[in-house]
Amino acid sequence: MKLLSWRRAVPQSVPQAVAFEDLALPLASSLYNIAHWLTRSSTEAEDLVQETYLKALRGFAAFEPGTNFKAWIFRILRNTYLTSRSGLAAMRTVALEDELNESSERGHHAYPESAIDRHTPETNLIVLLNRAALESAMQQLPTSLLEVILLCDVEEMKYKEIATVLDIPIGTVMSRIARARAAMRQTLQQHPNYVPESRA
Image 1 (cartoon, rainbow, N blue to C red):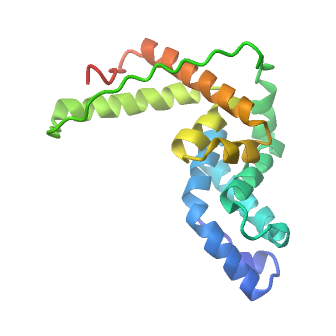
Image 2: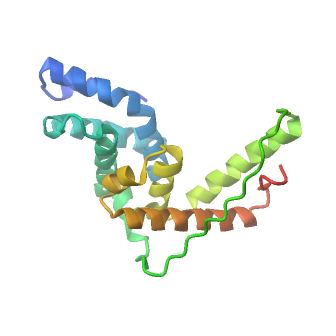
């Protein structure tokens, strides 16, 4: 992914541009990953990240030092996506949410760690098949559920950070994560190549 030279794109003072680069460059791959999942196109993802960086640099003077830069720039990415053609089309397909009667399933099974790590061709194949099944399940999620799963489980953001990025209450974040995981669990159970952890 090629990024424009920000110093040429927007006139900034040198210390401000350096400070922006120090904060923004480490997040390039994470931003691209989220953008690619949202747009489902590498070209559109690159354009989205480019536009995000440009908007973030233009508004960097308004960023409050000491606050969460990652949440701030991810929110810019999301807002830029939502105003794009693909973002508006994706949001139109999302049904209204019923937040009142949400039931979250918290049935986590603890599996003991294996004392010996045995990688065989069979276990490697199972891992690859499970990864493909997981990506397929994620692609079937509506945008509102996909973005919370990406921010929570891929980018490992805290609920408060996700709420800031998406501009929604923490309760809605938790509800969407529960619904997304339940939907993925159901899709994975029906996937022909998925092997549950207990059998792997």
